[in-house]
Length: 63
Image (tube, rainbow, N blue to C red; front, side, top):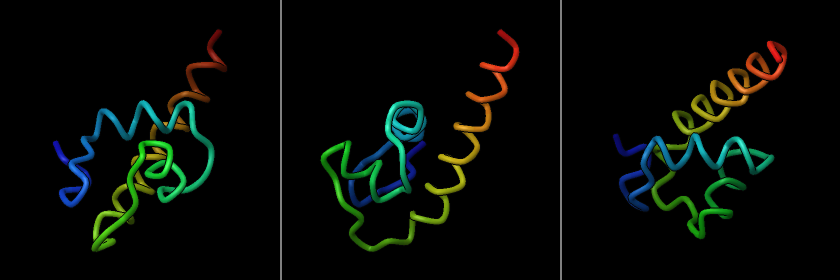
């Protein structure tokens, strides 16, 4: 599924970047070589970043 249609950023790409890039959605977009265009995706992107980072922390706590 595409999170950002303007930049063709898929959910899987955003989640993978969330695990290696700190910061907000705009920072993650920059790490992917993109920048928000219409900005309608940013709320959803922020939610996915938070969700992915929380899951990573939960998995790390299990080890």
